Image (cartoon, rainbow, N blue to C red; front, side, top):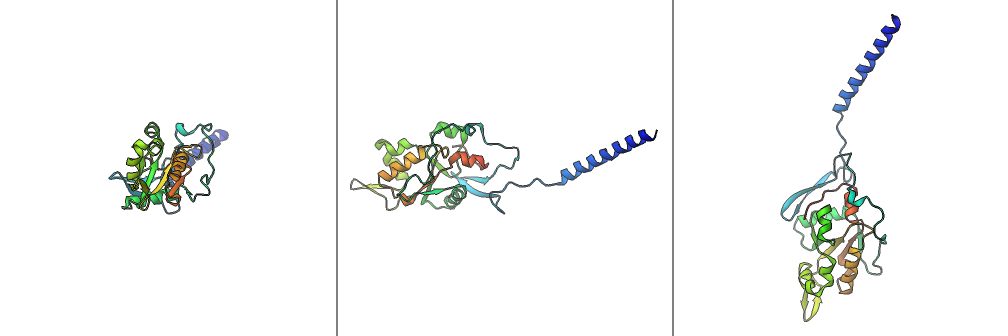
Length: 215
């Protein structure tokens, strides 16, 4: 009889403890996923549409399947354009450039150098513009592309005096699309100090859960 009493008492204690834990858990706020300390999100404009850039707040979220394969491409050096002074940047610098563009700084352009087929799958970084390698390489498309970079032809020579700062990215540190574009731009005379290389690209952007937009 006494043994049954202890069994019932212990069961009651466990039941009460579990209930109290559920109540406590329900009152515990979910910890926010921050970009940096005291920096959760930033409101920007992408093609006249307000966008809130933040990291995915779902703690069960994982990087998309498209970027899970580890076999792709060749690993790009951290500074692949030496001796040309092309700066390699990362996510915080990209966010700062997006913010500047959003506030009307038209001296900067963030360039997504991937084909539209990839952008349809992964989305793109807010504030960026799609410009493929062929748009720079081909003389057929180059004039129009350079005009968007604020570069004009004067007396059959490219005038880079008002050229925009180009922040160029592709799929990731294994992807060669943006390095090829940057090398071609330098060869054509584009000021290397006005070119920024986001080496981590879309894979790095996705890996920390930052906001993307459709083209």
